[in-house]
Image 1 (cartoon, rainbow, N blue to C red):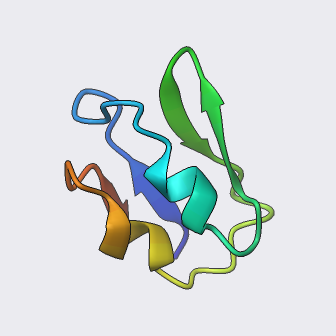
Image 2: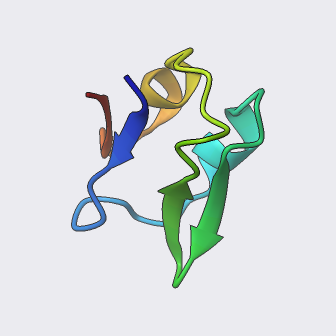
Length: 57
């Protein structure tokens, strides 16, 4: 279950980038993007996203 980002909702605030302990989230075209190979499924990004753009699938 890796984190999935809804790019229609993502505001590009970068809060999730700073929170990710696996450094699996980067910014691309002003939106967050998850590297599925690096994601450790911890859910930290889901908890801190102010726009609720991140879910765990």
